Length: 539
Image (cartoon, rainbow, N blue to C red; front, side, top):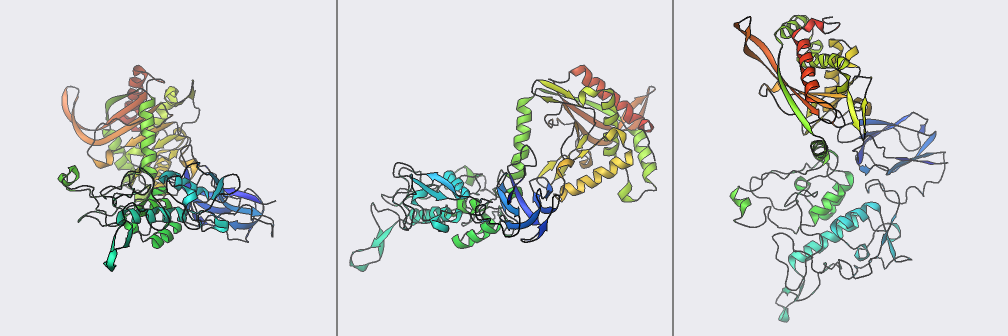
């Protein structure tokens, strides 16, 4: 029996994924464990393995397309099996493979009279639309009974919704026309409904900066909302000096096709997909803005005083994921940050000696030494190697230290597992390899999960001494590492210049208190001051 392959959930916060590459083609044989596709999220790339034997009967979601978790992306089964039940909808619609039945409102709805070819309603007062079309229609307040469906059996597709919104927007901006008496050209029609068979919603707010035609209510979904998948003025006439918010090549195939059909310039569309990828929904939202609308609404307002918006960036993808995670951490846990200065003069000299004969790719840095010292401290103070799970504080046997890695537009925390059992050289090598894969978006799920403590460093920027790192929930603590600098300190009553670094330990006060935090820092400082106490170092 044919089995459906769905978009896997690779993390608690994952909502969508992209098929970055199919490793098999339709008709190819597959066995359990065969890698059939690469799945990309905001942070990782995952090799998806087949869970059934047979052949690849149907690839539903094309390469480069995005789909929500649980959406069908392929079908595996015996040769010749019927897959029509799995692929009722086109693959380009965000991985939607089944028809969604949308309730028909009892009233006239938000778009006036039905467009030519619109569904009159299926039995039971319902219309057929793809899940992606249903989602977009809900976001833009579009009544699907007023939209002409072009899919199989008159089904409403994502493109149909986008086209209907765009047509309504154009009609509202320009105003419906009729032949003026005496053949003197066209004049606005008083009280007339917009053309193209799509009428505007009664009482809808006018599009920003556009005065509606006399007696004509603006179209539903015309007014753009910054941050809702479309930059102000997306696809329109930008102000001089404004920077594009998107990239022409960074769009799904469906979005590119839709942009061509609707005449939308993708360089001005803010993508709301994975890593800012432009989706069909984003194009539809951009198409809803009337042509010629200036980038900045109004003249002489605050925006003009500030010189206009240079760039409108979507709060989406990894940026939104990080923001929501950090906000939840701040709101959900009472934290205190403790600061200390560690003497690392001997460590600095030991590293220089050890690295003198090593190749560049084998050198050991200060971060690896800190991770090792932290791991040994956690052995002595296991309460910091804990997570809070509801009413239970779980103290973990394994010491898995996450190391924050900065990306072009965010960060990720790959994990060095059993760091207390590894040599400095191995820790340094793992950190280097994990950071490299992180920047290429090729980390595997088990390389970013299962951390019990996190280290984040700003030392390489040579500017920050101390800061207040936010805990990577549900962990109990996080250590921030500042820059290394020469500091004048007193040694046996005499001023001496020593290398020091700033340590910032943020703790969840629900799990650990101030006295243990001070003891943790003291133990960590002692290890850093005596580098040869770090086991199996140098090698």
